[in-house]
Image (tube, rainbow, N blue to C red; front, side, top):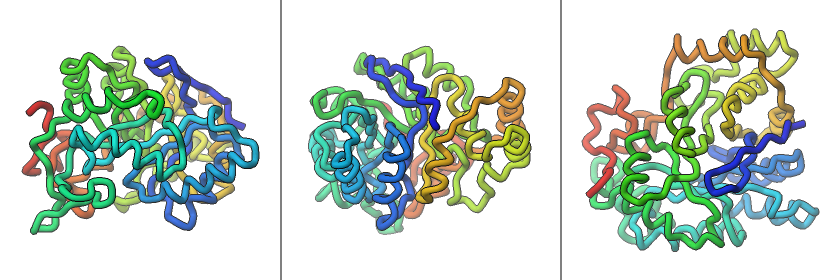
Length: 328
């Protein structure tokens, strides 16, 4: 069973540390996966408009609620997509999201990325407007501050807390400086090869909760997942746990949330069986990131269609023609 740990957001709300992610959960599989997660006891469910599966997930919620699971016992997150960044589109985007999910409110609504796409017709359905060269069409006249200001004005009955995802320290500082409102959370790529120790410490000092995605690595880039790493496997064998359970235990040290995803019922249940790590094993896992640092989720190189924008200032992004618009 899960250890049931929760932490407080800067709003005072409690967020479960162990959640369930739905990225890359295929239609036809995701309803059963989310239902299985809810029945296994997961309380924290992470969603997004762009995943394209919220209408199906709504059926899992409906079924679970009809069987006695209470909405108020869950913590549900979803995300504003890049095509919805114009301030006038933000509130309608939340309504669109809630309609897809069949819900009255979200516990947390995040700005998915600090970049805007230039869709001029249906921003809620045409999520990837393209240039003639096939790259995504960027919108540089809207800043991350413009979008964040609109997020802070959302009806708190519909979005009980607001935050961001994939934002760097520079981005977050600009949001705080320009609006006076600190995001409740920042959802970031984090795994044993991407520690981000100083950044996470800074977020903690600002009262920004960290939720971690891609905890096992990324299966889009042709490299082995971290559950196959020799250090992780050695620890798992020694403590009698799965490699996934070892990584999920590491991920929560420091009070962070982590959102593993699976559509396999047995893995969904296994990931919910939590273990505790010794200090020595925690340090061994941290050493992976010191020896083999790697960010996987770089939209300029990893995504198709390509996003022609430098988000994280990684070497692979330096040639990108666009950058994050902090202020207009």
